Amino acid sequence: MIFIFLGPPGSGKGTQADLLVQKQGFQHFSTGDMLRAECAKGTEIGNLIKQTLSEGKLVSDDIILSLLENICNDVQGHMIFDGFPRTLNQAIAFDRQLSIKNHKIDAVIDFYLPTDLLVGRIVGRFSCKKCSSVYHDKNKPTRTPGVCDVCLSTEFIRRSDDREEVVKTRLDAYERDTTPLREYYGKQNILITIDASLDIETVQNELLEKISNLGK
Ligand code: AP5
Image (cartoon, rainbow, N blue to C red):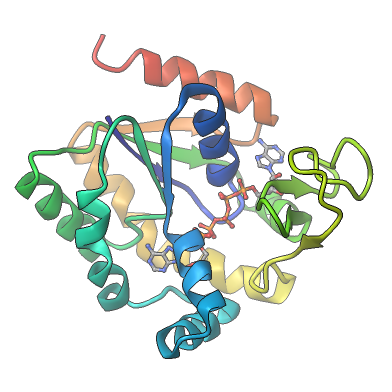
């Protein structure tokens, strides 16, 4: 099955996807992670992407779509697309590529929460430098202060686009370019909204319930 996780920055898409990977064996594809990996390589395109990310703007459809073919070739099992598609162009191109491979999107999970909660979630986020596990200063601290729960590393990083002054640009980009996808997927009757303002475990339970009810 193919799932799209749609939702503003900081709404918990990555956190919920990671839980589904750990507990249910889902595959998780995140364009944000893929773009950050490209930045780390220090290539010409990576440097261009790095600049765009640190300004909080969307990377061009051309760059994202150039990666599309590989993405569609890798579809198998239960797969979550997190942060993709993010524009109407990307959504239409993705539908087209999926249909060529005889696949289709089964559900689009719309993570809904009020904007005022998002900023706190984003600026409090940090992650393990070694295994990329994601934490939050208040909402999800490490069990032992300064030590990663998963790999016991003591080195942590914060994303360059998680600065308060960049967050507004990211939220504006979401509102302008990504919210039209709600209508696009709503018309296909595959949009499922969840209340992402609740705690991590409650959101996960709601998500599991809605996924298990699919097709019933
Ligand atoms: P991307 O990496 O996709 O970032 P995003 O969509 O902005 O989403 P985030 O990763 O910020 O948030 P999230 O919803 O995953 O929240 P998380 O689970 O971490 O994209 C980054 C950039 O790449 C974009 O700005 C753009 O430039 C570019 N890009 C990516 N895809 C693109 C595309 N398709 N086209 C063009 N450009 C693209 O949670 C946040 C924090 O809250 C964490 O600290 C977590 O511990 C905490 N938390 C999570 N859930 C809860 C909860 N229920 N209660 C309390 N705290 C919680």
